[in-house]
Image 1 (cartoon, rainbow, N blue to C red):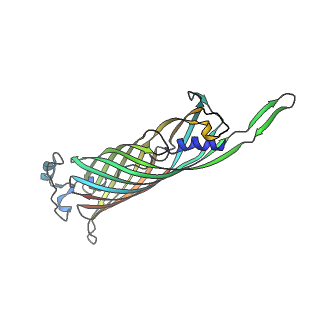
Image 2: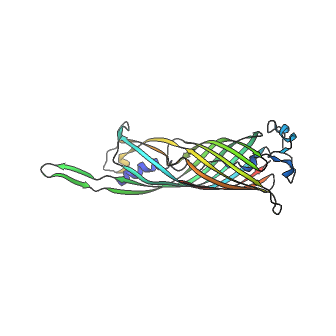
Length: 310
């Protein structure tokens, strides 16, 4: 029984956590600031972007350099919701109601790279590619089983049991998004949305995730330290729902079982959609920035990043 469960859980849980880490970090570089606040003048490689950029500069604003490249290191710990297990031969249509899942969580470490450009003075578009390495922990709760023996009555043959699993996985992720941003004096706001695909070694097909992150912050320009700083608070919404369908050969699980494909299906999603964000960025120069952001709630994450603009 445990060998069978492990193979099913391998297929199911590999995709549970992989999607919970990709939320872009295009932040302070997105905000237009008054020219008098800029300590250095750096010429962009082209003035064709952003569109309408020259009109905004003529109004007295300094815009970020149009192109950017960056890297992010991410750690995330996320609660998971697993339910609706079905099995069958030829079609997974038999619900297994008495088997439940509990204490499901995913811990991911990832490295991502991003390329972005300013299409408009208030709109940045970008692409992401990365590698993820993680693990999912969960408990599978098995019910007790009894049989009805004539004359004797119900006889227990299996006591209720909980089996714990720890599943490792790795893979690649890619996607894209857009960030809308603007500011007034020392204050700024941004709204980021991205859509990503994740391909994990234990799951057939891509895992799709939508992430939306609003942020509000303030710019700080201390005279005693080179560069400027931004600090913000915000929230992150993540929507992940997927039904995983696959099959396993019973003979590969146990040589005493017939060589028959057992189909299974299960629904998985993130336990909570929203969590709270706080972060900051040090713009060392108009070309170089360093970013740090943390998330608290049911989903906890730390993001460290660096970017270069040109």
